Image 1 (tube, helix red, strand yellow):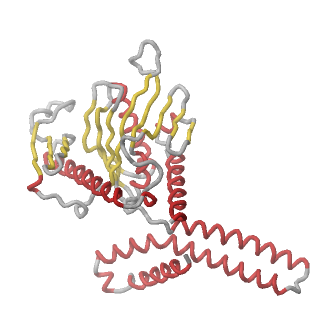
Image 2 (cartoon, rainbow, N blue to C red; image 1 turned 180 degrees about the vertical axis):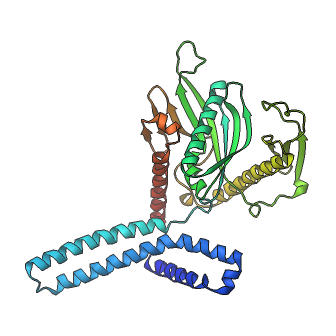
Image 3 (tube, rainbow, N blue to C red; image 1 turned 180 degrees about the horizontal axis):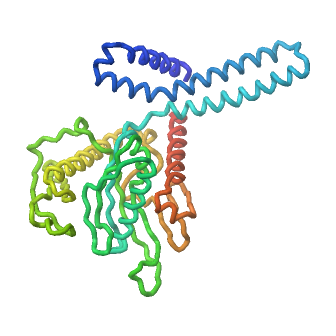
Length: 358
């Protein structure tokens, strides 16, 4: 591990030199690329330097103890320093193992989230709306920007389907464990007998694809224009601004009618299409690599039941890591960090375990 860390530190120092070079400063693309690499290496280098400081203190105190001839008080002081340095070296070593784990290349990306009402009819659509509200409030608490890309609302205020983007640094790293089936247990407002009903909604979280990730051939696209439907005042249905994009090779269809501008709807539809196609490519790639290298906390499969929201008991339970929090109301108001941090910790532990088995 030390050789690898020395190499990283050398690369870090080289980058700092390059960033002062007039040639690099004048090349914005190369400058931005190096700045990003420097940012990724900084926490590793800082922790490695901290590790070396404690390792040096450990060596010095051990040499003093081994040499002998120390008076009682001084020996106790050196022994204390030795024990503390040993603890610090071990702690830094474990932290460095985590920092050296392969990064998910999508972690810093924006995300596209798709929520669909599942089993349970109107109650499922209402639950889909509550999940959208929960994610919006969580995103806001993180300083992320939320934009609705497509929606299919119901008369009672729920959603058969809603697609939205979350923009901000590290958005995918905070949302990526949300893909799967979310289950709600409660007495619906429409239930006169007071019986608890179980409904579901599916969530899919996609890293937002950039133009360079997925190249769309115009010949592969069929673009249809139609009139918007649903609530929206007098202008709805009078202008053909809604867009339906069909990707002919896969048969994938994306509709967007959220904006009154045909061009804005087309941009949004293509953004969703690119992200869905990127997901397909990544699923193919994941299937080809060894299972130990895949994220271990859940499969990320949208058909996997991942979480239950139980209203009578006021709890939210994540089935992948066996964590139950008795703060359902706060959770639905966007207080999700405790759950998300636990998922990230469990995922890191699994990756470290897999790395140790290689």
